[in-house]
Length: 508
Image 1 (spheres, helix red, strand yellow):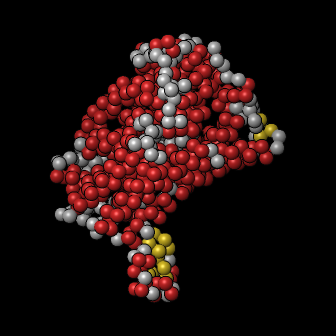
Image 2 (cartoon, helix red, strand yellow):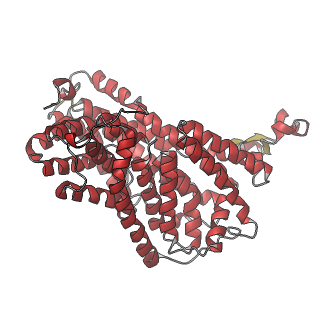
Image 3 (spheres, one colour):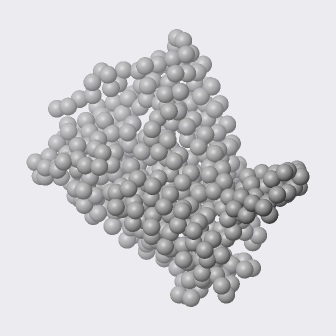
């Protein structure tokens, strides 16, 4: 039997009140988020940043010994690679989505929906399927949440789909891809940490993911019919020439093919970004300044000599001296995520405090020793344990890394196969990371949504979805958790170590 070693659970920072006191920063933030978003209805990412900052300060006063040790742990957390991975996905996806948007892709979607008679009631279900396809192809649910919220969400709202249901459908598609994509970080981490090969893990989880997806699709069909509203007078959206924007399906296809071929997500999205920019300019969909613009003062020497510099002039826009700025889809696509980036760094730092302070170990040791007394209860503990960790860490990959040793220990205690352990670990971290109002995937989509009123005159502030209101409608996420709870109790899909031997772990 493999057990956790002393090095796995010994706290590096000690707190007044014991190991559980290390959870104070994260617990404070969760309460703040519930009050801000849920009770007061304030969907402000920068406000959440303030909440996490205050939580980290409050936690410091409970530290035993030098505060420098606490500060060092905070810095260690903010430099974690898992946070950097999420940030990179957000920045690249944001630039890509904005560049496609200025090229009229939303107009093209509205045109296509009208031509194919895809009305407001059917649009959420179709959105779920398409988001699932994109997320599975590119391997990033965060990137899918950003792209679909920036592009597909306004098209659906213009048709009359319920905004909350539509946002839930986008997040559900992101959950599906994050859970199933072979190139997803969560898939790789879940396989490697449970000593299983990635190909076998993906093949073995199809029976869970597809069952949950089938129920989710039906739920979106029913809810879409019941919650559909009236189409919005969106002016030029869906006009006569709007079909040309669908050419950016080529850009999206390039991203999917490049990612599936095994290239890094940065490379895949970069190729999509370049191709979308070329299509915008060559087809007259958008001027170069719509993608990158230096809004220089009319009084500057460069602005006055633009006619002599045609290449530079394509990106320089003369403005009044008080209105100078950098603009365009590349700028706005990245800048819109800066508050979320700061928030994620701080939350991962808070999670690091809880991990190094022994808080996670205290909770999970209790589950290991007192609750998981049979195979059925052990697997149920795995499901609920991953849910608990995801409630505290917004980045699902970081949550997987935090709880993976405990899943491995508990699974080995009852001789549960690595495939089964990896599936339980990945499904719940993928699902719940898009359900909690402070989850990274949900906030990534919401950050993209906040810019829509600036991009479309018809899109009002009332159409924005409060992060605290969407959680009941992330149907695939809930069904995926439900499938694994049912599997834990009934034994559906359960495998023991002798049942199947894992192949070589690849794509590490």
